[in-house]
Length: 298
Image 1: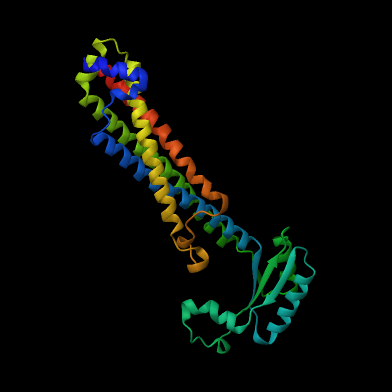
Image 2 (image 1 turned 90 degrees about the vertical axis):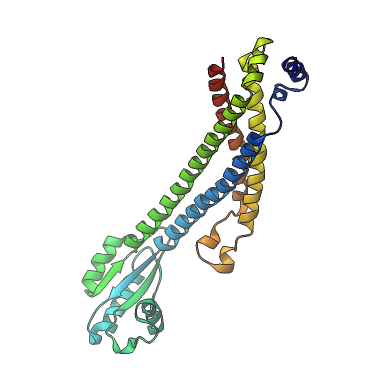
């Protein structure tokens, strides 16, 4: 009789009324969806931040180069002047300047400390080169330098740029893989919760079948209820995650990579896709669990 009343009620208010509205499965589904959505916001922020980092490193290093001049002291000034003349007539060079002693000291400070006697050491001269947007012919410049200033070595920072950009790209892929794992874990937990709810209501399901309820009707009831719970939990977790991201220090205020972990501009819209994806995951997981369990419960 109770099952019959449930079916009659479901016909007017929805088939999910046959699912018990409370219990540990409800709390488990809500908590799992909220927690996974919260983590998904940070994984998405990591992916976007590393993407920006890769672009920034690529842009900042792609247009910069260095010429190192190693020569006897009496030939140093002549070689520097020869290199500067070569750079003036080289297409693709926007500007160049010779680094002073204080700048050299700053570059060597992390390795040798602040008291390095720059004047007493036979350090090479460094010329910082800024390229135009079109770039320059690196091999052609190297040949010209070899002819005009044999002690000059051109370094376009390729060996430094490639590993940094590759590392940032790997971090971005790690963030995307984390999203996949997070939604996979969500699907697994919701599947277990749905199976537990179905198993706990085995007698009710058997009674519903006796009074004519189809498996599709019963499965639809569980799917709707658990999908709704997953969506509500994901919305709550996404909001909390976005608030937590917004409270992080800004990159301008503190500097560094981790302080730049966040969203900017229109990228704040990206977390809004997490609740719909979570609902789709909950729908698929619950439907799979419901149909599988209903085939077992005979």
